[in-house]
Length: 527
Image (cartoon, rainbow, N blue to C red):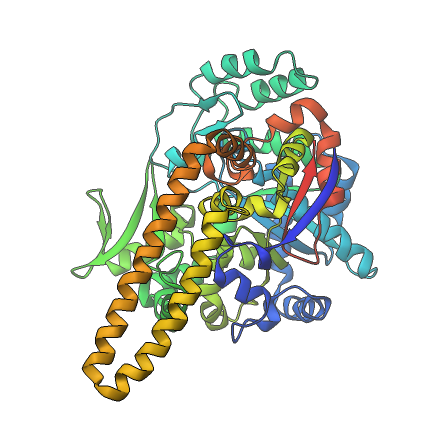
């Protein structure tokens, strides 16, 4: 496996325009939140001034307790020591997908580790620790209860509705199915044993995810934190109280949400008036209705005094939603930068004024790199069709039209005649309008009618060429699907086991070495 090439996000059609404008510092007010070393240094000062020693001591105790019984590596122990002093963090987070879900789970963690390593090298007097934040309080189990390989779809069943991190493994059918697929792979046994250890009946999804992340990334010094902890929630009593009483998140983000909606279409996540859930055996939204705090979909409500007492006595029962979670994270971590997918970055952008209201430093935001593992034989097939790798990330309809109609004599003739026709009508229209305006309009209408005929002929020509060149079209479709399985990016489809089963930790190391932190880009490897 070796690095083949890379394509900057700015050159990819499918990257949202909001992300491109953020990266090129075109969004007013966010210029200092894009990665460069000047912004890193500014962020260090902001975090030094705001992060208290009390937060640090709570964080250290929680980390030590959550790792109790786990054999830490030397680099992890060293990073905990750094955190006990004045180290900063570089953070990413993700849902607790079954066996990590799509492979970009791995890529975003590797980039977080690499980013921390680069900063440690750049700033010898500072220390930076990579952190993985488990989104253990989400409750949409159907989003995370499965993963895919090239051959199979794997799924687990469980009773859902509460915080997903607390869900216990009840079935093991997917383990048997996985073993059948990978038992003969070079590193298949290693994966099978890891899967069985992580998803032993009785383990929670949070425990399973911690086991997997520890196995894959502990040697890099990565530390995992689970926010579903009463001591961490206790640090959020004040912002949670303000959220209940004043709806500050909703009110402070209105202007930014309006701007983003106007400029880029609907926002990624719409703020609610109250952005908190109530945790019991289920996780249910809190709303304020008719003078009461209502737990939606449950026969449970609180007066103002009752819910404030509940928060004071049981902060662990209050759970942040997707928009409140960044505030929770940045409050309890000495964080400098957050590395996330495009969708994550887009909803973080909504929150800057809310962070300002809380007097909480808004972190640098870094869109994670994407990766593609492409077989050499696929590259060879593409070259036979005169395709470059970059072509495979263009619109398929446009690409297939270009290939099928390349050097087509009829198309060239149609294009030539269309140009001549347009020129003649322009001359005729000028003369016609000098005679009578309505006559000019008639000429314009006739030009439009005849040009539409040319478009119909081109469409008919393309349909005919698709039939005539069906074998070439089929080859093109197969190449495209090998790069975009299920018609989406490979990293959003295949689980990491597809690649790890053949290469083991060499695959992780190669991805790590090929990872760039200076640019947001698609990095392509041959396998």
